[in-house]
Image 1 (cartoon, one colour):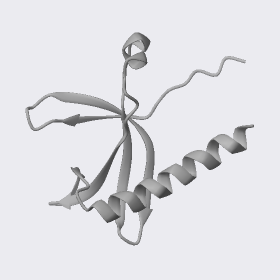
Image 2 (cartoon, helix red, strand yellow):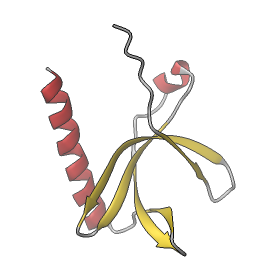
Image 3 (cartoon, rainbow, N blue to C red):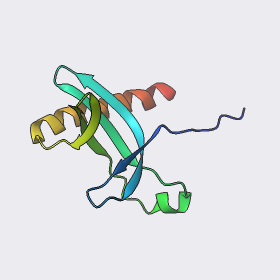
Image 4 (cartoon, helix red, strand yellow):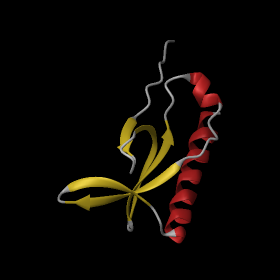
Amino acid sequence: MNEEYNPDLITLISEEGEEIEFEILDIIENEDGKYYVLYPYHSDPADAVNDPGEYYIFEVIETNGEEELAELEDEEQLEKIDAVFRERYEEYFSDEE
């Protein structure tokens, strides 16, 4: 079976104008809003080996009818979304066994 992995990617532009590509790990929507859990994407597997493995949580902000991603600065909300993501992640991988 040839199952090729094709990640869902999104490109963000840093404050310095640099384009950074991320893999979308999850999109979480709840009563507080919509959030993206993103992981830096490396097209070269050798670069991925040296990656520290940190993922990022961004909040979706609507501006003039357009969705924009912003850093989630509310520590309590960040912890809440992180807990939801970790639970989903653990469930996903425990179901594969």
